[in-house]
Image (cartoon, rainbow, N blue to C red; front, side, top):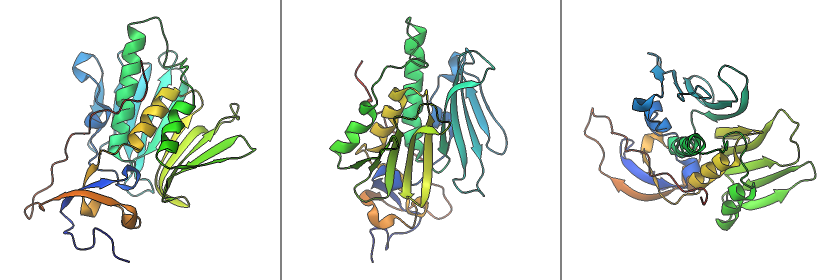
Length: 261
């Protein structure tokens, strides 16, 4: 079968949809996290690419651990703590192969929650009251299927079946994730994201809103996963880069609104 990428130069830049099949994109922790580093947010990165950033109060921590030889290519981790240096109250992990724009939108919402808590008497980072349906109803409006099981889980699948979201709504005592999302074939996904119990649903909603956004992602042809290319749509193409040059990654798109204030 032919696919839209078949006759394109590997170095050609394209804008593609759906987002969950676009590939990770250009990995830059500073851009993905989008924190105000000049306002007291410590940031450090080693020569091998490992990076970490912290909130000024040290209750929020986000890290990037690249492992290019491993399936998933490493891990992005976000954790919140009730007090510095205590066990995390909740944790989010993304495979490094997750589209970086999804990470950017989750971290933008994370910063928004942090600043909201800082300037009010709320503690939405630990006591979020956002209803779970705010995270998954938008998927249904985009044609995702919905299956509920008696074991306390519900699963939402993309129209082409190459992505999904699983919500464990009735197993709050479990050590597994409350939410799990993936892109690619279910048996061997390109990437997986996991949200532990206690994670603010607002952050899950920011993730799903970004996931189904119709704003295409910029990729070079060679960076788009091969096995799912037939399910991708090319919005636009741009001329290939001159030989020997490296495409400059565009900035992540503006954050997608995930809730009503």
